[in-house]
Every structure is written in C-alpha cells, then in structure tokens.
Image (spheres, rainbow, N blue to C red):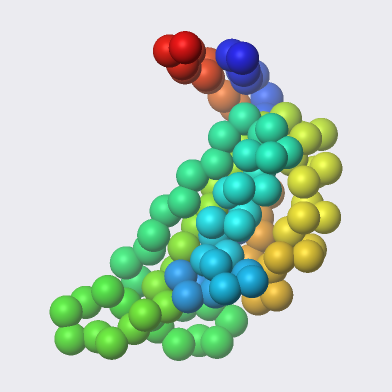
Length: 116
C-alpha cells in the first residue's frame, strides 16, 4: 500500500536518553514500533552527540567521556489528527523526556512499492 502525505502536517519529536528502556528494550525502538503499528506516515530516530536535559548533566560522545546515555530524538510526521491520536501511547511509555509538537508542511511523501 502506498501512503501519500502532502501539505499541512504535525511533527512529533520525542527526546529521551539512549539508555532509556521499556520492558528491557530501547525506549526509542518501542516508540517507533508503536508508530508503525498505528500506521503513522513515518518515524526516524536520531542519535545526539551531545546534550543535556532535566538532569542538567551534559552527556557527550567525545573520546574521553564515559557517557552511555546520549540524547536520542524520535521524529514522527503525519496529519495532526493521527499524531494527536498517538499521544496516549507516549503517556504510557515516556517517564522522563521531552515531547514537542510542531506544525510543518510536507512537500511530498510517497511510500516505496515493495517487490512481491
């Protein structure tokens, strides 16, 4: 099935720590898999190289650092209605993190056809 999304959309960005877990699996992975099950248009995970959050501790990937909890951003884009319907999933999953919603415009998105 080819999914098309163009025009006004809502971007959901979830910032969590790389070491955050949900049932012994990476939290970011659980968010992506739930977004997939919810048939949202797309989700990607981006690993930060340095950052800080509510703890005020700076986490970094620099050579001499021992940090194992780098920031991770999960970005999901779909229509406003579909993204807002997904928010209760995050209420269950995210104990500590930041969730942002931004209006955006999608120029073009078309799912790839898969070979049978």
